[in-house]
Amino acid sequence: MTHNLLFAGVGGQGVVLASEVLALVAANEGYDVKQGEVHGAAQRGGAVVSHIRFGERVYSPLNLRGQVDVMVAFEKLEAVRHAHYLKPGGVLIINEHRIEPTYLNTAVTYPDDPVGFLKTKPYRVMTLNATEMARKLGNERVASLILLGAVSKHIPLKQESWDAILRQRIPPKFLALNQRAFAEGQQIK
Image (cartoon, rainbow, N blue to C red; front, side, top):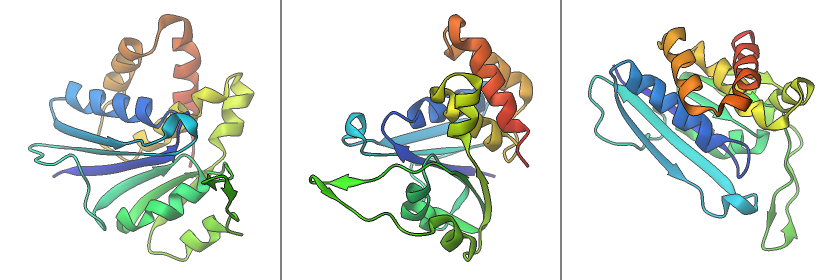
């Protein structure tokens, strides 16, 4: 069985780090892993999307529309933009965080209720305010690890592998904070 995940957010939210950690954890457990990213003007607040696929044998890094098992939206509007990748019954984890989009220096109106809209679709929608949770931990940047902790409950990867890769990938001075953030995400119901 191949597990298909998609992470979507805005530059600077930790999408690339979270997808890299997930890919390393899956590889650590012996899965064939493919990861592909699209991050155009990410450093300027542009969209960032990361496809992660793992299983016994995986041939392509890109997910097909309607095939994603678990999608994480690091920002609400990104959930709407990429939800078409989810399969019916797929898990959609949404960070209740809003970033006003701007295109070509023209402000675009933010939709009234993107989460409400997505709850009318055939997905299992989970929401959490990972950004606010991260602020309470002392650093907004660990929101990506909170979201990754929430993802960990929906895929068959062992806690020992998560622990090992976090120790390997996160610099020692930030490790304890990131471990706390990951653990908080695992508590989300």
